Length: 279
Image (cartoon, rainbow, N blue to C red; front, side):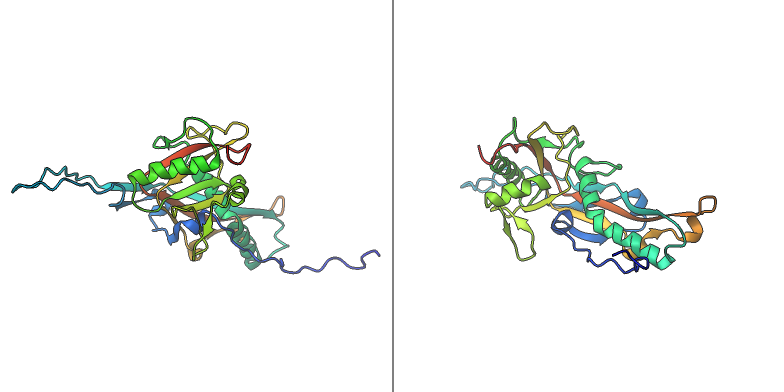
């Protein structure tokens, strides 16, 4: 039967539900300081180096201690995630336009942040690939269980706190097939060692930034991750009056949010063969 009238406009029915990913395993999102939105931020941590030890000798003086006075400073450079729409000004009020842009932003920003972080794109740092500080723990492609084992072995030989594994979404089915993960009380997936696992929109590129070979991806492990971002109350958003193009009678509306993503101490990489399950 043909429609007698046009379709009725109703609100979008499906809720915006966040999936597990980088936002879940990271500390935050914290409120980014105003000046850090364009200049980035720094913080100092005392957890990058393991404590030392010395032998107790049967004499008046203890053995020699080697003291270090270095302080580890983490610097995070900012980037911007934005949503946009090109439309007729007649179709939406400013309030509806704001809600459209906001929904588009919050529904997809985690995926964008994961991608930016995995590539160090949009001038973001510190990230995963394209990072001169990456240490590779494999000498060629290995199966996923072997890769996790080598990453955790190297990481926990140098660092005392739980780390974070960053993996492309394609590896999720392998991990669950091999029963490698358990969910903790916060809903975070963890390995047997307690390493947090972020599965998401990671590029899986080599440390040099090249696309992985066919049948391979690169997996990374870092210290704990922190995310800062602009709160909802301070989002930059245009309105119809500001962006109306009268010659075409269209509005180009934009909403922006500034981000800084950092990780503590070190970043490791492993080359993973995904053509099989376990070699």
